Figure 1 (cartoon, rainbow, N blue to C red):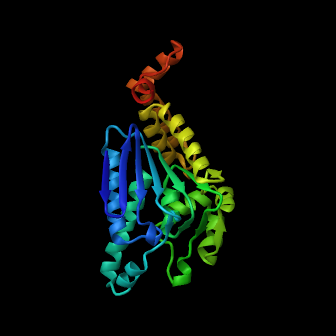
Figure 2: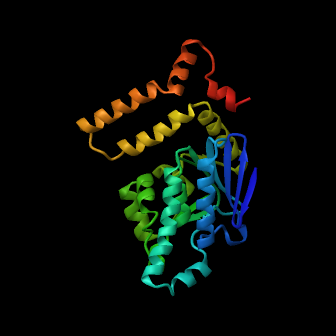
Figure 3: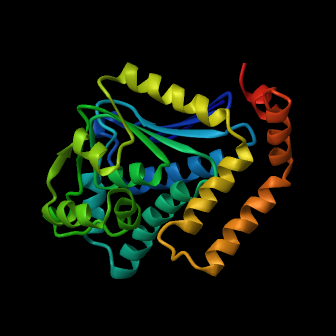
Length: 268
């Protein structure tokens, strides 16, 4: 199943949902149309019963080179209220991607600037080529990376954010890997696809419900104090998952030395 939403291509291939930024002539730069279309494509993937893993990729030489110049010219004349509404559109996109209950993988090549870094940070896993380049260049334009900041800071840490938010330096894929923005580096596109295929295999071998619960668990535990309430919450979560349909099936499959039903349903 394929859908074309202007600057976005959306495809379902078996259990994989593949969303491609598809404006290579403009290096997949952000504008209000791309934001709306990408948000819609992500929501459709969330609702699809077939999709178990979502891959976010980009056509052409660049993942995303930041904001489109024509869009920036338009928003320069917006009122404060119009600017807020516009910024909330981007905020909705980032939160939609971050909060997707299904695993997400970013496939990154070339330039990833501004909002492009935000998209990568919002994904659960990110794989990039060694020649990818990154920048949070907003301060050079008198702006700040505000809407993407919660996700980028969570990905690279507060200390690194102080450097790259303030200097707007371009940094290499090796630095993005060191900081944790990228999980894997690949010498070329083919190797990157091989890595992503292996990751998809691992994700499809896992219980769909457990993956959803694991993402919820991370959000509930990260940066929270370890106290009685948190301990009780984690105990409640595992107790609930143990008696779930997939929890019971997974344990039974392990004891019976067979594959669980969700693997038979999704893999050859």
